[in-house]
Length: 124
Image 1 (cartoon, helix red, strand yellow):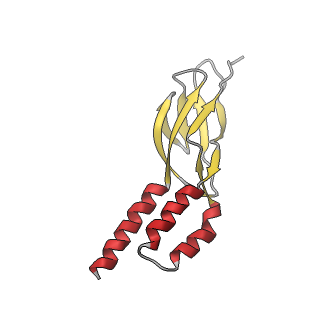
Image 2 (cartoon, one colour):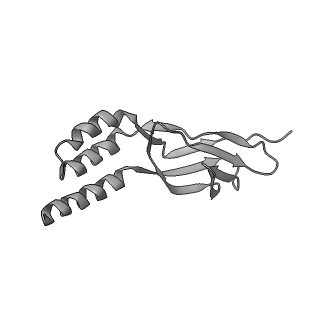
Image 3 (spheres, one colour):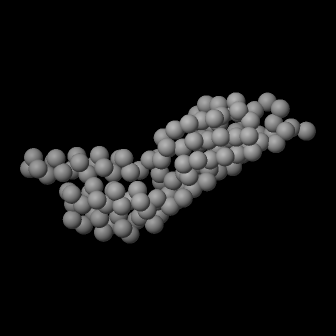
C-alpha cells in the first residue's frame, strides 16, 4: 500500500510540473499595465509568470498605458503535447489505464506561447 501511495505522489508531482508555462509579456513601450483573465500581472516587461495550461480555453489580456490605445485580445497559444508526454510518464508509474485516457485527451491541451509581444498604438 505504501508503494502505491508513493507512486501516486510521484505521478501527481510530475503532472503538476508539466501543466504550466512560464510566460514573458513585452510591449513596444515599457511600463504598460498587463491584466490576464482579470488578474493584474504588473507592468511590462512582465517576466516568468507561471500560467496554467488548459483544455481549449483562452487567456484574455488587457494591456493599457496612458497616452496609448488599450489593447484587448487573447494571448497566443500552442499545443502542449510535450507537456502531456511528461504527464503520461508520471501517471504511468501509478496507473495502467490513465495513460490511454491522457493520450485521447492530450490533443486538447494547450497553453500560452512562452514569449508574447504586443505593439501599442499612440492614442489619437
